[in-house]
Image (tube, rainbow, N blue to C red; front, side, top):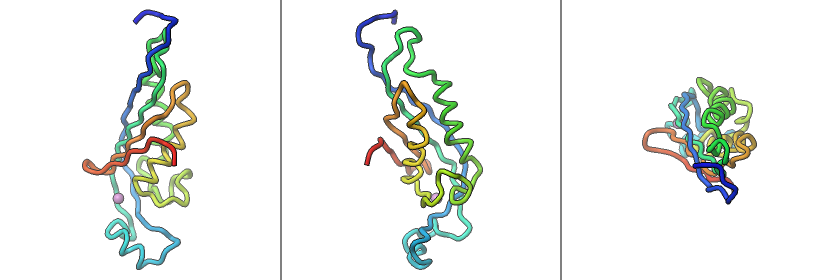
Length: 145
Ligand code: NI
């Protein structure tokens, strides 16, 4: 596409990253029995691991000069800096500052990742974050309450 002055099309781009981490589902505001019954084997005292895949989608207008919404390598670097490097090979219950006090379910992780990434994707905007905890299970968050 050549440079135009008309409204540029809105498009979405998605990048994917993986990391491995340990977690334990446990809500310290409830007693051990409640946690055992609620979370089952996910509450085992010493935790367990997952290889997570996070898919980050941003939306924006195509820059008429570059032809990009956002440089893919820039988006990848943001995801790497804000999420992957801080979580990879960590215990999500204790090692990650922005997850302090959070029960590290995939739902909560998706929202926390969103909050870390959203301020850094301008001039695009974050529109979707998918977190795959296993091949079969994933959470999709689109922002908002
Ligand atoms: Ni788990």
